[in-house]
Image (tube, rainbow over all chains, first blue to last red; front, side, top):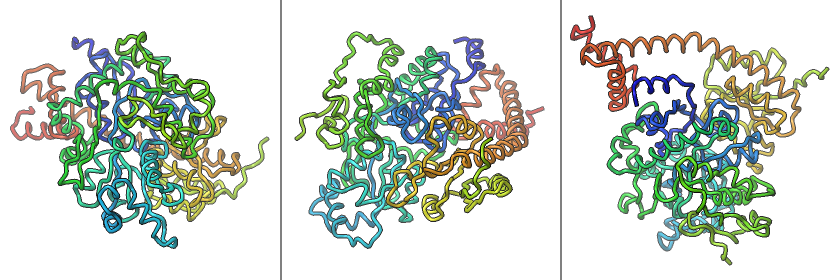
Length: 399
Length: 201
């Protein structure tokens, strides 16, 4: 690209993209710093945001054009849950996995005395025993998640409920911003949390907590963050939108390339981004949490690229709506198929990356009969994720 | 004519900008509202909301603690009066004005929406005023200063390395990234080193 072309692009009105300083904002940062946005002819301005609520509100009212979003966020906004109803969509999944559940040392010690084996601790069985034996006079154990409409909230509640723990009655679940999780755990304000990396590994590394299980181990491989946009903006600016998706895809490949890791960590640690030390980031990126440092090895498998990783999956939107219903955030919804298709846009993903729509499988569509009972089937556990994760689909044969 | 706002609405103000919080609080009191608590940081925010039970919480949009409030509408056991961010679509114009001014607001379900809107207007006006004041004083000044520093450093690099402007800019950017520093800090270092070496004349 000539200097003149570069100048013209850089003088264009920028596309404003918000991000939260977490490890999985990496593709946005890399697309900017390595010039992938520029290569696609787009002038992007990244804006560091302080909360998920701020991201949602700014995208709703066009102070931002798009953002690094929780995968459930465009669904919540499009349904008008917890906010003014605004059509949002995603045509690109930024990452799969990366969450984990960690508890403080004091709780861990109590669980050890009630566990016959480490499995009892990892599965929540020991926690259930503890809750059953605790005096009802005591304040309930308190767990934190990062946002009410998040995989963190749903994964924590799912994990608790598999052990027979009622996540509304037996424990208290509150929201704490990721950067404050470690301190809250240290000061005893909370007993445990479900959060993205590096906040699980860091608790272990600093000796303030024990990581029990990863999101991957609870749900298999599932989308974590997406590039979410205001649907109105997407319609008005389709060429730019598709160009950004191409740049993000390149960035995702770059992020997953092992040879790039030291440069990646150095860029991410910069004050404009995560504003931390490189050492603090190294832990969060390990695919397998090693035995020795951790109480047992765990599969984390945070992924930014690979077969179908970046593809928007309407089936996941169906799953998330089931979770929202299960935890009383959502009432009945008509036409689940239509919402899933409008919010998770496979067609635009294919168009951006030059994939044919022809071979696109529609097997995620629910039949009329399934659609009518879907939310209830997910809520009652009649439908589960396939153990390998959403890319393999659902397990509808349970019980 | 709409009826005058009912004045018994109670407000909690959360703002880590003490000067602005004071201005907003005064304006609210002048308009006849009761600010029951002003928090300069959101430590124990949810506990404070539970304890003081305000009808409305006004919080800086840039506060990282907003997400904590987002959860309160579900905490029915601990918080008998659920709090919601404006969720009615006919409020969207008010909310947009608020968001643009940097105000976000949470309201207890079922309070008089006329009073809420009137109070929101007071907050919006003061936030805007403060924003204008601040951007005039700080932002413009520091941006100009930043630009001057970067331009000066670029000039020095161009002269020293005999390269063109884009190359000098790239070198500066790379240095900033490698050192995990801001561009302006790197520029300042370059200038001071060059001046030490007598190369800036």
